[in-house]
Length: 284
DNA sequence: GTCCCGGTAG
DNA sequence: CTACCGGGAC
Image (cartoon, rainbow, N blue to C red):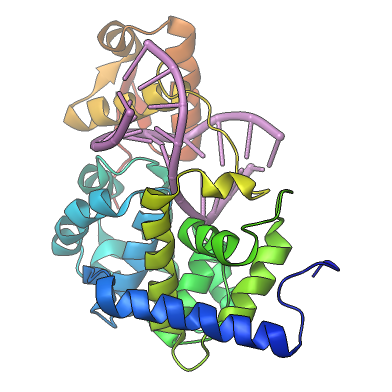
């Protein structure tokens, strides 16, 4: 913590932390969101939701989540599913590599951990598609462990509570220390739900709060990007095999762009190629 | 049309 | 640090 940090030990700060907790809990009791992945304790279901929620708004996940769980209700069913099927169900979520990572994680949970998600943070962190935010969320939501973590809503809430008058950018370390300080160790699961809901509320009330975070990055435009093209190619190939020429014509993009996208998608295993035609990934 | 929102991996 | 998706707000 920096010298002017807001959460150094001391009587005043202890009071401040109690106030923050009280505000957050009060808001949660009144306006907390009842989300499908919050009413379950099934590790698989919570794991799926956390992968889906990466870089993806709650409203979109709400739509896809039940469909995905119907198609793949367990670690086993997901692990055995053909990649093409998983990608097909995933369509609309964006960032298709998450679907690969999700199935790969299911396989590792079965093969390495006998179908039981490990409690250990580093073991979670080593699963494909699981970074610090997701590992922390899984620790809290599945295992009720007091692991502080940062994601966008938590970041926003902490900036609001502890750095509202600060002019400078706030670093991740500082924010993580705040997260650890306010964490209610009696109930980490509900505490993080509450803090995230508070942050989500702030987004509507005070836009752009997160720009005070060092973590904040402005995004490259989506229109005309390779990302957009990749998504289109995957969606197209799932409907039926296509040649590069077809893909170029149908997407209206340059041959170079199409070639670049195809090479990358092949390398990542999101498509396959046979006799000049591109297909969804092969079975098993 | 332009901008905004959101974690992980290489 | 950069690449990865898509929908919704303005």
